[in-house]
Each structure stands twice: as structure tokens, then as C-alpha cells.
Length: 285
Length: 327
Image (cartoon, rainbow over all chains, first blue to last red):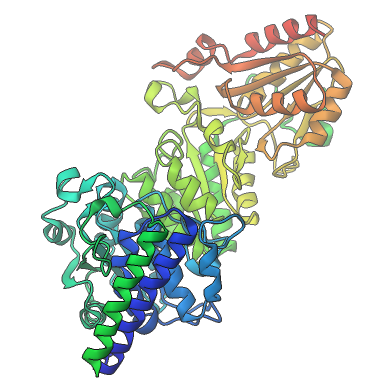
């Protein structure tokens, strides 16, 4: 599905709104991850507002595309995108991580059935996504399976088991999107446990590999579209992102992987994001 | 012998009682359910023949999934298949699945309430010559602590076969274990079997022997021998470890007021512990436990190992005598 420039601008603004939603829900929650959700905002906006075939008012619609989140800790971005897409009221975002909330600290299928899968312990979503794509193949279904993974979680052996299986079984209905932000809790991925040469590893496992700017909506849409034309292999899109994207004091700082802003920091973050939003609007005008 | 109501094998106590590995019940059970339910799919981690999934794999190649030596991925793939309407059976040795993939079973299967059936082959010390690494003696413990999980230990070939059908009828995660070696066929196709309902295989008034798995046979043998010495044992096939059939177990023990538990598993946290938890809460009575005493096994013939590690007719009888003194 092609995307017009006017829609790209609209989605860029929406991604900015989603970043503000993330900050607002994290400061209210008082805990949670900041850097990953912020840097994934463009990808989740592109997925929920252009790429996925889905019906927010009918979340279990049988022919929907499946979006599996493997790195569950970035769920604030998924929740914000889902709320903006109409899955549940925006006010629910303020219940993140609170007792009785459908928005668990790590997403849980039976608390919020529209998230498709429970995730948190890293690597597990990769296999679940492969199983879902395999079921679609068995039943000759046309819908596609997308899986968002972090880069750091590729240190789990299970991910490579899933990659090996998908390559063997030529699951061309499966697309992985990797948030290549180069950080994890203990530092930069290449210091903690190097992942490079990342693309070559996937190629060696018989995947089609694309590398894009994970903040460029046009590239995200285009790569997901390209993946549909690959018939012999599953596709991985390595999305290069800036951790904490949009909030100057969080950007590229691994220290912001696993913490949430306090009230003062949240104010500053929202100020940054509003300034960026004005830039998007004025560029558009 | 009071066995008519449960239709046990009439040749049970003869020297030429038929012996079939319980794993064959898994293989034959899969073929039964496959024909009736097109959603049943079978996965294995490079163990298609020894888990007895081969018959299914040959007859239904499109519904068979070879995962290679990757049990964590197998559990996750099964969860994904189940979330899309399939009824996957994952087949491996119990030491690997659920031994190696416990976190995937906990999160991808149980927290998702995924309709996955985990078939743990080569369970117990009777795996024999393969040695301690391959003898699953902890699997009941690690499965019964998981919310949503149902845990079943069939006693023989027939019951394992019935268990496969029963697992399909249940919506949600199920773990059941079976063994490698030939063991006596205790039951018949007419023997009642329902997950969650313990069956009294021998009625008695002095003590309740609460057993699971192929050691139900040794328990019945011990009861026969003790009967000749005037001790009247009730023997219960307590195949469902979770949820426990509290009603049947309490009814028996209110009558006998003494218990011996029997399992081919660590005593700690296993089937016997589940029974102890029940009686500690509802009806405290003296209990002795037969099983592995906090150690690993070793290579050897199955019966040699059961003897050496104290899971045989002799130790069951000794446990009965010991507990009766505490009554």
C-alpha cells in the first residue's frame, strides 16, 4: 500500500503525540522503560495506522494481521498506539502498571486480549510469532505476522532457534522488525555482547534482510511492503533507531533503558516533544 | 481381589502379564485423536521415533512439525499454533521438555492459557542405561507449581492412550509424562479414566496407598502380598496430580487413617507432596513417601535402578508397616 506525503506528515505528528502519551503514562506509573518505547513510536505508528490490516473495534477479527511484541518491556508505545487507534479509551493509559489495570507492566494477553501475546522474558515472542505464521501457512491464510523485537534480546539463544526454524520453513508471511537502538540495561549492545555483523547473521539463516532508518515512516512502510514480495524467505527489517528519540536528555543514553522520568523530567520531555511537533507542523506548512 | 468395578487386566497378577511401554500409548493415542480432530498437530525436537510420534508424522505429514533440537523454540511455536486455533502436542524427553523450556512453558503457554499439550517421554529412573542426565525425576514438581497447568501421570499403556484423547477435550495447558520401558498393562479399555478423578483400584480398610504411573503395579503387588499377612490395603491410582481429586482421596483416608505415597519422581515437591499438602490441610494422618530421596540416578537396568533407589514392592511394603505403627 503506497503512502502519500500528506499521510506521512500526519503520521509523524501522530508519532509525536504517541511519544507524549508515553511520557505521560510513564510519569504517572512511576516506573517502566523510556528509551525503547520512545524510539519505537514511528514504527508502531506506521504499523497501527498504515501497515496492519486490523479492526480496533473487533480486536479478535479472524483475518487480522498479527502483531507480536517480543520485547514486552516496550509496551507503553504499543499501549499508546492502540489507544490512539481506538482499541481502548485514552484515559486507560493513565492506569499503566497500576493494580487492576489491563495495561500490565509487561503485556498480558488475558488482561488485554488485543495484544495477541504475553511477553516480557526476552526471546519468547520470536517463537510465538513463528508458530502463528506457521499456523497461517497450514491453513493457507492470507494475513501476515509481524514481530517487533529488541536488538539486545538477540542475545537469547531462543531467538536464533526461531530464526533457524523460520528460515528452514520459508515463512514468507513473517516479518521481524528489530529496534536496533544499540542499547540494553547494562550498556551498549556491542560492549555487553556484540550482535554485529547482525545483517549477515540473518542472511546466513536464510532470511531476506532490509536495513532502514527506523524513524522514517516512508522507509518503514516501504520495507514492510517489500517484504510481501519476497516469496522464498522470511524478512527481517533492521530498524536503526535513536534510543529515547525526541527527548534530548534521554537520547542515546543507555541509562534511560529501564527507568521512567520524574515529574520535572517529564515536563522537560514534554517541552522537547512539543517543540518537535511545532517543527513538524511548520515544515508541513 | 476386588477389582471388578474398575475392570483391571484379569491377568494382572500372572507371571505372563502383558507388558507394553507407556510411550506406545502416546503414539497410538495420537493416531486416535488425529483422525477425529483436524486441529491436532504434533511437534517434536528431534525425537520423533523414541517419543512414538512417528506413526502420526507418517500419516499426517502436513500436521507434523519437526523443530530440531530446540525445545524452547518448540514450546513457543506450540503456543503460537495454539493461539491460532491448533491443538499442539509437543513431544520430547521430560528432562528437556519441560526440563529445558520451563520459562517458555510458564510464559508463552501458561500465562497465555495456550491450548498446548506437553508430552514428557522417558520419565522416571526406569529410562535406565542412559543415566542420570536423562532420568526425569523433577518434572512433576516444576509443572504442578504453574497456574493453569494440569498434570497427569498415566499408569500404563491403555491409560496413556486414553490420556491423549482426554488432553484434547481439555482447553488449556496439560502436562503428562510416560516412560520408555515396557511395564505391565494394568487396565483395560473398559477401565474408567477421567482427568481429575482418582480411581480406587483395590479396596481396603487399613491403609491407603496413593500411587501414580507404572509404580501403581508395584503398589498393587505389595497390597496382594500384605493381604496374605492380614494387612488390608486400599490402592488408589492417583493419575491426576493437579487438580487433585480431594473427594476420593479424603474418603479413602477418613476410612484408613494412614497413607503411603508412591511415585517415580523426587519425593520433594512431587505427587506425594501434593497429597501431603491436602492431608496437612484437611485431615492430618501419618504418611510415608516412596520415591527418589533427593538424589540423582545412574546407569543400570530399569528394575535394578528401581531396587537400588527404593521404588519397589519391598520398599512399599516397608513403608506400609512403618506408617501403620504411627497410626
